[in-house]
Length: 102
Image (cartoon, rainbow, N blue to C red; front, side, top):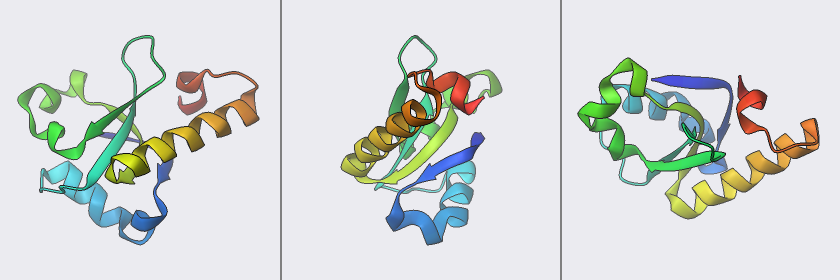
């Protein structure tokens, strides 16, 4: 599992970031946690429920998502995506999210 150095985290998870990342890596259940990852296609970002990472497809190193954000609840994930897009546009003047995080 790969996490960005510029990882965005919901304010409600800010103090528990280490624990949440550990649980994501070890496959522990987190029913309210969503992750924001760079899209593998032409889209900007994708929102996944944390439980999806337990599937065999995501265990292969080539298929692991590059995580740029962790949020509490789907609404929190959408808000975090908006914050990420706004920050990318403010700093680069474009919506090139992939080059912003790489």
